[in-house]
Image (cartoon, rainbow, N blue to C red; front, side, top):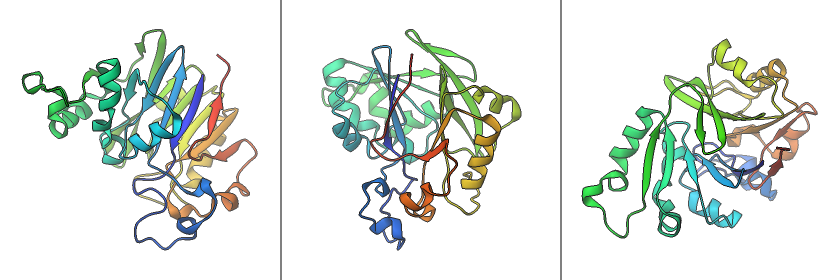
Length: 255
């Protein structure tokens, strides 16, 4: 299994318009962060988790020309606004299945009605078809996926576990039963917005507390805000088994 960080930034990305933080003026490419998303290459499938407003740029960076499925964590724009940019992929490879909570599917149908309305189908429209997921295992061909349910302020969000890898973003509160789904991992990717408290995201100390409890072999932090500071400086204060993710970082897991 290969995991590529397509983006590791918070909803505004880094640099952020009008924000005067050191990370926004950094010469280190690791401090330039598109909106959070990953590409999973596994068992001859390309699965994208979240399709934000930087999707086109992210795909061009990876030279990926086919997407077999898109998983959505939730409906916020920084995780969904790039859905129209699947057009060239769907033109070449056909309809792309998307997987999300029913609430998210209904939200996308309102915002991107032309993707779903067969009566108004036209040649310039991308094509997707929805698959509603619940808090139980589902499969994409031979790939078994376990949703992880948690709260992002007042909004329920799904993370995803595949084998001994898990991706969890926009987490604020999680129950013990759901947290237990994240044990015995080789790699955990977890959101960590900044150093200070935030109402809808865990901060760095809270992320490290979860990681210390779960004890994955390796953890990477994502969904990072300018207030986290410079990548190079934050890396120095992290435990040996924890790293900041950065755009373009690739992880290889043994299948």
